[in-house]
Length: 98
Image (cartoon, rainbow, N blue to C red; front, side, top):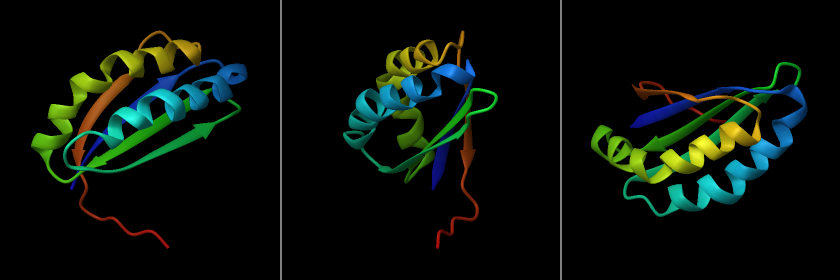
């Protein structure tokens, strides 16, 4: 499995707006992408930092999906008061949820 990690360093007062935009605009696009496995967003409300992780069955799938979410990813950053998100691609080597 592979993941795209998006980090947004925004305004603490705009976390909810960014989360809502991710839920309403990014998630529906992700659900339509081939190989999509899941999406998690974490927030530090005191600093305004958001980290979103989208999971895909392969490296090819996660990279192929990137163009589909690029504009909405930027819109989430803007809603959160951030300039530009930082994006990384990593292989998932351990994945366990309770």
